[in-house]
Length: 367
Image (cartoon, rainbow, N blue to C red):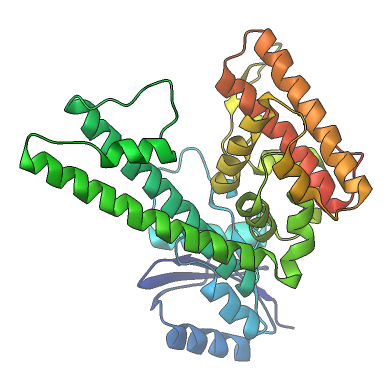
């Protein structure tokens, strides 16, 4: 009777280090480095499949994505994509090579200590990448605007600090500026031209995001999430495609931990020490959630929010209102206790994530 073979792979851009271990053998019996090309990888696993009855494989999540995972699944070979930070490692092991990493993965797989990451569908992955690109573009636009304002400040061009930047009045002021030096005028024109082009691009990306969110597979979930104050299309759709199945988290606390919003802890003996948030898991969603949580400094009627809630079930709106009142109360209470705004907003974001989980799993009594 042929035994199960465990295949650990350390995957890089050009190479894949492979280690094979059997369940009835404590030592790795095969090691090899392959070119990271579909043809060679298929050939290797096809030969292995002809010899072995049962194959389990794994590799760490990384920049190479899920291409190898999907190829092996098509070949009907079970593959796990391991969370890198949750792979058990010996504290005294200070040697790291590709072959040793492959051996470690094979042993961890055999010992059933692998913690797999969520693998999205191809469609969800494509939408996720589009939204991340959209978010990057918005960040680039923000930095470009900061560069222009810093340049103007250096040469003594200051806008009325009592008014908001990048409004119609502010842009009119920018266009009216006069420069004594020709080089300064060129600097301003180049900065402003790039900003204008980027703003036009952002408008197109936003329209495309709205189109994606209206597709049948996303529309219902996105509409529900947009009932929360501070959660509009980008944030709602990002949560839907990044998380996929919310039910893989058994309770709200697990979802909070996945987003890295729970406090770190170092307790020993009779002492319990809590530190800053862990910042583990999905940093993109954590950032979007914290941005949304700033809206809970105040909570009251809003025409924009009312438009987003139009046509939604009464129960959904009531649940979102419950969240809004509770989060606003939490923000006010923490600020009254002397907490700094940044820490207060993170605490609000943690609780908001619990409400989002409850909404998506239909457990409106959660959080």
